[in-house]
Length: 438
Image (cartoon, rainbow, N blue to C red; front, top):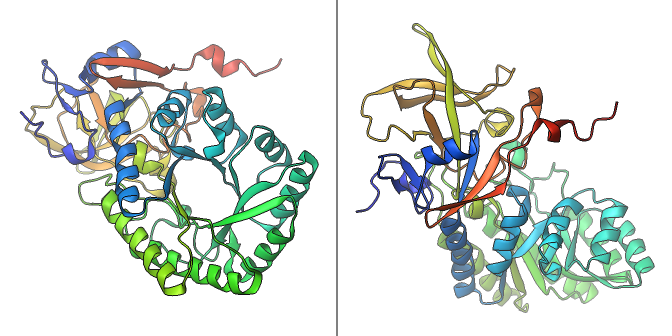
């Protein structure tokens, strides 16, 4: 019997009811997981992760065979996930030497790693070249000069892409819009010609491609199509002026997922069709060869696969105003609601059959009035000790976690076929003070 719940569309694929009537993922009762590993707890469903990896490869590859899917590590990476993505044949989009080190620790083929970022340090570039990074995505003229020098000293010719800023508004939150003109990322199109000419003239660099990234959590298809049009017309102009051959092109990532029931997102097939059809059309029109396509899903891979668990503590009702349900997490493990108004749904994991609902606000435990996870949500009558599950928590929560108020960071588990594997243990107080020096 199929799992019947209004939030099924945003829960992991394996969501079901346990024999005890609790919410279950990967065959694991979430209440038992909370008892075993404590809360807050982040749970990833392996089946959903692997299915989504395959889906991106299939939907893009069936429309445009020369496609490489690379996972954007900033959404969340650790050694277990890096190993999983390695097994699934993905590449990696890294933005720091730390993310690169995680990949290297599981013998990830770094030839399939693309190093992004607007301010890579000399030490990071030297390390990346020493470890055999596949591509450096160059972000500005300073980095272009720095990398030219670093590669020359290393005695290698490094493959690079230039990140262009096409001046497109993807209609997302301004904090996660990166393709607009006023952005810290990428070469403005007016500067692109100079950057390309300098890159082609550098003996230690091999310019093979162009990259754009419009932003994060993009619910529209048109911005991607506009970006393809702008970049390929630029490539055609640069071919005429400099003999530049575009061998690789990336429209970035930013593919949205539906966090709430009232924010449906395009399907993977929709994104794939919009991008590949535009690419095929514009290359035919301009007489350009078809380059390799690099797509960079991050949130789209891990977002829906992850669920956060919290335990209810204090309850405060202000008659005629609001009822606060306080939980044992908050901005320390998920800053997104406070940072840019991110919205979530929630489920009482141990009260799945409850039908009497009330309007409440789920607040965090941290000493900030802005520490509110979900404002004005309909939930069953909750009591201290109840377990709340928040779907679509797999992206950007854990990597942006902090030790604010000296609270410990949560554990992370991976579930599959009725087994739960701890892939990041909960911090200890010793961890918290390990780097302190008296």
